[in-house]
Length: 124
Ligand SMILES: [Zn+2]
Image (cartoon, rainbow, N blue to C red):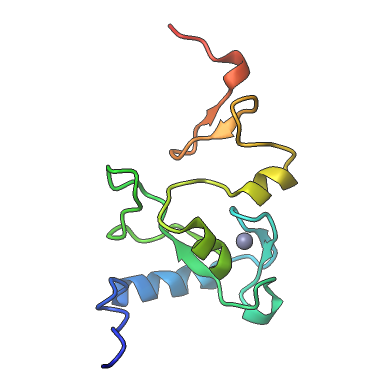
Protein backbone atom coordinates (compact mmCIF):
# COMPACT_ATOMS: atom_id res chain seq x y z
CA UNK A 1 0.00 0.00 0.00
CA UNK A 2 1.38 3.39 -1.04
CA UNK A 3 1.85 6.14 1.52
CA UNK A 4 -0.85 8.78 1.54
CA UNK A 5 0.22 11.83 -0.44
CA UNK A 6 0.53 15.18 1.30
CA UNK A 7 -2.73 16.20 -0.37
CA UNK A 8 -4.51 13.13 1.01
CA UNK A 9 -3.20 13.94 4.48
CA UNK A 10 -4.73 17.40 4.26
CA UNK A 11 -1.57 19.28 3.35
CA UNK A 12 -2.18 20.25 -0.23
CA UNK A 13 -0.51 22.57 -2.70
CA UNK A 14 -1.62 25.80 -0.98
CA UNK A 15 -0.14 24.53 2.27
CA UNK A 16 3.17 23.66 0.61
CA UNK A 17 3.37 27.08 -1.08
CA UNK A 18 2.50 28.78 2.20
CA UNK A 19 5.25 26.89 4.01
CA UNK A 20 7.75 27.87 1.31
CA UNK A 21 6.72 31.52 1.74
CA UNK A 22 7.03 31.32 5.54
CA UNK A 23 10.52 29.84 5.26
CA UNK A 24 11.51 32.28 2.49
CA UNK A 25 10.52 35.22 4.71
CA UNK A 26 12.02 33.72 7.86
CA UNK A 27 14.80 35.64 9.58
CA UNK A 28 17.45 33.16 10.68
CA UNK A 29 17.85 33.10 14.45
CA UNK A 30 14.23 34.06 15.19
CA UNK A 31 13.16 32.45 18.43
CA UNK A 32 10.92 29.42 18.19
CA UNK A 33 7.63 30.32 19.91
CA UNK A 34 7.50 26.82 21.38
CA UNK A 35 10.98 26.11 22.81
CA UNK A 36 12.64 29.55 22.69
CA UNK A 37 15.64 28.27 20.69
CA UNK A 38 16.67 29.95 17.42
CA UNK A 39 15.14 28.73 14.16
CA UNK A 40 17.09 28.49 10.91
CA UNK A 41 16.18 27.95 7.27
CA UNK A 42 18.95 25.37 7.01
CA UNK A 43 17.73 22.18 8.73
CA UNK A 44 21.21 21.19 10.02
CA UNK A 45 21.43 24.41 12.07
CA UNK A 46 18.25 23.68 14.01
CA UNK A 47 18.64 21.89 17.32
CA UNK A 48 16.49 19.01 16.07
CA UNK A 49 18.27 18.87 12.69
CA UNK A 50 14.98 19.11 10.77
CA UNK A 51 13.38 21.65 8.44
CA UNK A 52 10.99 24.11 10.09
CA UNK A 53 7.26 23.42 9.93
CA UNK A 54 4.15 25.56 9.71
CA UNK A 55 2.17 25.69 12.94
CA UNK A 56 -1.62 25.44 12.89
CA UNK A 57 -2.72 27.64 15.75
CA UNK A 58 -6.25 28.77 14.90
CA UNK A 59 -9.05 27.36 17.00
CA UNK A 60 -11.59 25.53 14.84
CA UNK A 61 -14.24 26.26 17.47
CA UNK A 62 -13.73 23.02 19.38
CA UNK A 63 -10.33 23.85 20.89
CA UNK A 64 -8.48 22.00 18.11
CA UNK A 65 -6.37 23.56 15.35
CA UNK A 66 -8.26 24.49 12.19
CA UNK A 67 -6.17 22.90 9.43
CA UNK A 68 -8.12 24.62 6.67
CA UNK A 69 -6.46 27.90 7.72
CA UNK A 70 -2.89 28.22 6.52
CA UNK A 71 -0.22 28.45 9.23
CA UNK A 72 1.03 31.94 10.09
CA UNK A 73 4.23 30.98 11.90
CA UNK A 74 6.98 28.38 11.97
CA UNK A 75 8.12 25.98 14.68
CA UNK A 76 10.89 23.40 14.86
CA UNK A 77 9.61 20.08 13.57
CA UNK A 78 10.00 18.35 16.95
CA UNK A 79 8.36 21.31 18.71
CA UNK A 80 5.44 21.03 16.32
CA UNK A 81 5.18 17.31 17.12
CA UNK A 82 5.35 18.07 20.86
CA UNK A 83 2.64 20.73 20.53
CA UNK A 84 0.50 18.16 18.71
CA UNK A 85 -3.17 18.93 18.25
CA UNK A 86 -3.37 21.80 20.70
CA UNK A 87 -3.83 25.55 20.49
CA UNK A 88 -1.14 27.37 22.44
CA UNK A 89 1.09 30.38 21.93
CA UNK A 90 4.12 28.93 23.69
CA UNK A 91 5.54 25.73 25.15
CA UNK A 92 6.94 25.05 28.64
CA UNK A 93 10.56 25.69 27.58
CA UNK A 94 9.63 29.07 26.13
CA UNK A 95 8.04 30.07 29.45
CA UNK A 96 11.11 28.77 31.28
CA UNK A 97 13.48 30.80 29.07
CA UNK A 98 11.46 33.96 29.65
CA UNK A 99 11.28 33.41 33.39
CA UNK A 100 7.57 32.75 33.27
CA UNK A 101 5.49 29.80 34.23
CA UNK A 102 2.18 28.94 32.70
CA UNK A 103 0.50 28.45 36.06
CA UNK A 104 -2.09 30.82 37.48
CA UNK A 105 0.40 32.83 39.55
CA UNK A 106 1.93 34.34 36.42
CA UNK A 107 0.49 36.20 33.46
CA UNK A 108 0.05 33.71 30.65
CA UNK A 109 -0.58 33.86 26.95
CA UNK A 110 -4.08 32.75 26.21
CA UNK A 111 -4.65 30.99 22.87
CA UNK A 112 -5.91 34.19 21.24
CA UNK A 113 -2.60 35.86 22.05
CA UNK A 114 -3.99 38.08 24.80
CA UNK A 115 -2.04 38.24 28.03
CA UNK A 116 -4.06 37.43 31.10
CA UNK A 117 -2.58 39.05 34.18
CA UNK A 118 -3.91 36.90 37.00
CA UNK A 119 -2.57 39.24 39.71
CA UNK A 120 -4.55 42.22 38.48
CA UNK A 121 -7.59 40.45 37.15
CA UNK A 122 -10.73 42.40 37.91
CA UNK A 123 -14.33 41.49 37.26
CA UNK A 124 -16.46 44.36 36.06
ZN1 LIG B 1 11.38 24.93 18.92
